[in-house]
Length: 109
Image 1 (cartoon, helix red, strand yellow):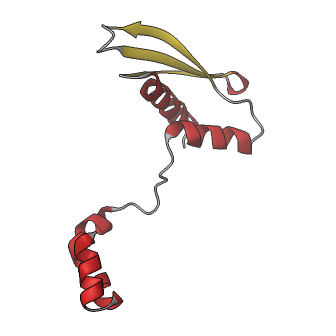
Image 2 (cartoon, helix red, strand yellow):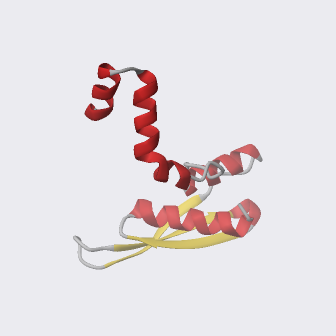
């Protein structure tokens, strides 16, 4: 950030832009502009709301391990669409994301 600001202050915007594009070209080329930056739970919720369907029901099914190293198993159920999935993760949130991702795959999204 400081380097870019120094280039801009020392020369102009065009030179700063040229430097940024040169420095980050590989990363910029690797970006998939067609992919969404939204997480699986958000995508699933938006999909369901757009079709006026009830929101998914997430339940913690199981928690294994010691308090500092737990693995959560969470279910995601869409009763209206008769879909069910489970996800596992090191936190409840990660397990919910995995379960939502699995449902999205079943929906072909």
